Length: 370
Image (cartoon, rainbow, N blue to C red; front, side):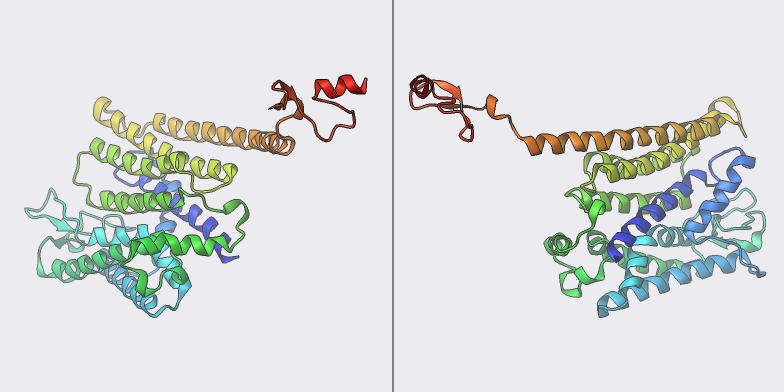
């Protein structure tokens, strides 16, 4: 079932994409231990080194143009009502990498060796800020030639994400005539889900809130990472706040009906949040105590992961017992002996119409039977 597979894939990819920014080069993790994690997580944002001699500036232009083309394809497919898989990938799975490319196209920053601000894809593999040939002057014709089309495409993309986030990237429930009718977004998705048996992945009423919370984090994290115009500690606290948005949404607005699935969702967000907390701790150690390349943040990182996973296993272990207890109570109901009804004689006595004993629950009838 496409609905089930898409939900599982979406949960995994979105969690990995958000965790990547906790290990960006601006956070002073211990290099030897953090580098393998960074290399692995970069693949989720489609960041990898090409076996070609391509300059960073060319990669920067290529990323911007590629993001513009992705938005154009998305709009054309959605407008034509065709290419549901393409629409799903661009609107649900590629929000973070596309927004990162757009942010990098006009994220100006200073340079110690230059008297002007510059723009470059600093997060690209093999990017070297000391190589002046890789830098583009902020506000120059070369910069604006890419930044202006990216700004227009970014605005269109964000507007298109509003309805398709409510529909979880489902083209079938988001035809063109409902894009400007927010009430229809939620109604059509709920109507479709009523006819599907998603088992444990059946969404709850909080699923819509959770999807938009993921969208907020999917936009805020890459934009904050690309600009890096704040002080390191302020930057760390800001990205920690963005990581907390989907976590709080999953806690207070349950995205799924099954408690076990909700526990797994909360666990994934706790793991991500713990990663950012370790990064903030690393920044604090460097700024307040001058400690760099320390093992302490990694202790917070891996120790927190172990505790969170153990808590999830405990919840998953206790959940079936609670479900069996609730099912047993629902099946048995309230015992007949404890249900008191007002008898015609005016006394409150237990009633059991199915009892084989004559006069049960009626004192007069019991005396006559005796």
